[in-house]
Length: 463
Image (cartoon, rainbow, N blue to C red; front, side, top):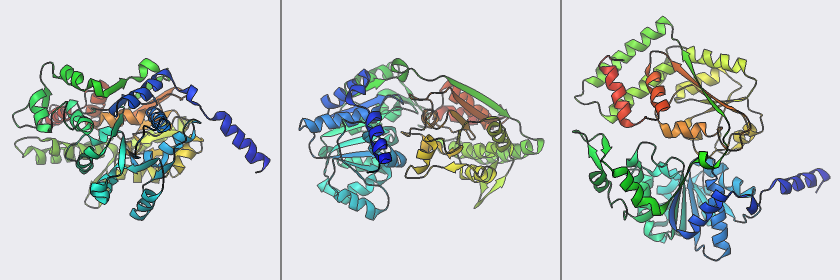
């Protein structure tokens, strides 16, 4: 080993954290997992769900209480870049890992390796359950960002449901357990107790705690139901808020109105009217057709819309606004986009910008300060990624109709370890659906019902 390599190795040892560096609240989470084989950590972003879980696994292994294999299920980029990397930063973690992502042949080989922890992306859970069938080998299952299992209709939930009786430990991790309301809780809690707390079916859960509208599209909680649900699930849940435990960096939210030219306004209004006339032919504005309409209007607000195979350009006003921000800033900028048309236009206008890759190389360069402009989709970068070392400025080029993705994306920079004030710019096209979405995000009242109300106002020409 060269003298340079030796110095680097020594530096890594000095920088490596130890068990003593865990915070009191993290040790509380460790004990909770150890004491409750089937539980959930509903912890705010930045409270260290990953290291708390790894420490619990390490302790259980050391005490011969970790039986069989452990499976971690996570979003793809989190699977590829977070768990093993986080373990390498702590001297007390001596677990071995096998990464089961990528092509089927690569996954098959990784599953044959001997390891303490096997990591797979959530999209491959149906494949994994089908592969093993009744020979399911994982006694311990960790679900990172369990809110992605909130739909009981999803194949990933249905697949896991089949093997629940074969698991000894089930641990759910998320900072946003019910991003769209209390309905999101049922399937997650079912994975822990097979329906003991909230009922064996979603239908029973709805009947017990909710009132539906005439058409059965929207559900509101019955009086006292929220408290009752929380009381029922509380023995399974450890919940913490970052504001109670962390000194968070200052955050400044900035709304930048983007005025459209008269031509762009006319095109937007014409297409909006066309889409609204199409949707209003239905007797009821359902969640499905409302979401389709909202998507089209958000595309228009950003400046382009897909028609058939290609997109039609409406305006470049948001690109111009972003260019002004870039020109006036000497700091790296994280840009949130929503549609492929947005990304194509962003890359064309700003060729120095980069996208996230699957294996974390761009993330590494970003955190080293080598990427001045990073384009990310909120759904891809919204969970688990640590980006706070690379910059402190976010620009929402296109807003999203998901409070979960919005909060999680902002938490990539606004989190513990951030040394600078975090500035979050929102490009809001005036006179468009952007204003409705921004109001809902600001009030944290962004739900399926809010979407329907906003679009009904448009259809009634009240907006």
